[in-house]
Amino acid sequence: MVNLGIIGVANPEFREKFCPALHALKQKTRVSAIYDCVAKRAELAARQCEADVCLSFEELIRRDDIDAILMLSPGWPGLLPILSCMELRKPVLCTRAVWQLCGSSADQLDRLAQQTDSLLVIENEYRYWPSSLRARELQASELGRPLRLLSRQPSNGTCAEAHAKLWADLLDWSRFLLQRSVVRPNGEPQTPGWTVQFVRERAGQTLDSVPFVVEFTETENSQLTIECETGSIDILGPNQLRWQHLNNGVTHEPQDEQLNEQPGILRQIDHFCRRVAGGLIPVYDLTDALWAERTAAQFFREPFPKAT
Image (tube, rainbow, N blue to C red; front, side, top):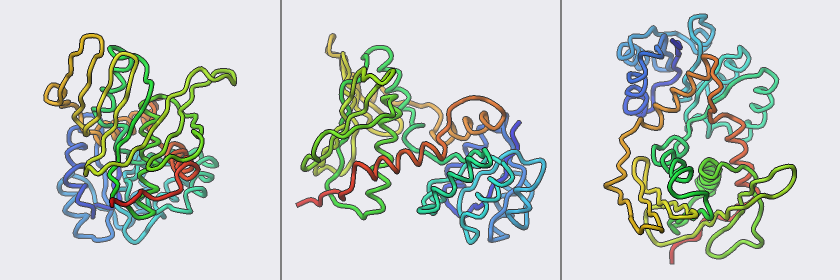
């Protein structure tokens, strides 16, 4: 049993996403205490989780009966709870909203994490989608190794911050799907789109490379396609994909691939708690997030084109 402390319950996702996930994991985890900068809000959440209320985040973090922290919304303390967790070597999982506050402080957090051997896990959407895991299964079985990855994005323009976040998410998602982390440029940027190469190496030698192509379209929804040796996969959403086997011509439509597996956040909290308990299961941590952001900054410097 992993005992968790929760900091910040202002985000509606606490009720809509995290509470159901924690309830589903109640055989493995227990919420021991909750802190929020609004005391009444903390009391209501604690009643829902059958947990204690702490008067400060420091009190919560320093409790001996709490193994790890879920930091769900920042409030006035900002990043201070994360710093306290690192100093006390207490594992913490933070939401994307909290992570986005880090900004230029991310490198400092990275240095502190290395000095204290701390675990900072960051909420990740795409890696834990049931459709992402199914896509990896199909590559390992029916469809063979990937040959090309194509992302279609709406050409509606976006602000610089959202642009950088999306590029980082796309690169990390591609890294997860292709199981490759070496990225190389593909010559000059293409208009209107981009291409980079995900490379697999051994002993300094390139074994193969998979192009990751980004195209801008006038559609409203994004879509990711994986072209494989004997077929293709379209990831259409968290629980939905379409795939086709070229040899037999059979197309498995979305209604056939409605994946009613664990929600992504439930799986990520489960992996986080298993890691806290001493397991070696991979988690999306600070190192992964920094890799995605630095690689995105290296390759993608221009905002999305606006629709004409």
